[in-house]
Length: 122
Image (cartoon, helix red, strand yellow):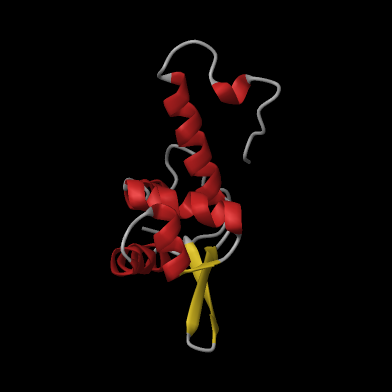
């Protein structure tokens, strides 16, 4: 596979399709989705702060962050003994936002994100 080939990968025969599936698989976990949402809101958080936000143990959050880091969805910055996590780019948060919006559509009616008074994450 020539996935490292540069150029637009948005085509049915793209070598990036398999990698896109891996991204979806990485985000197919509620805790990881919550981590992405928390980092979108806060910008940068420590493991302990993320654990509080997503209501999981720091050890569990650390394991999820390690996977997200390997997938290059999150990046780190170290300050003394503390490590802070942030989203590598805006794409994961857009995927999560679109998934949440799609889930809202499954309820029927007009989803909240279509109301003019609702802020939309992008």
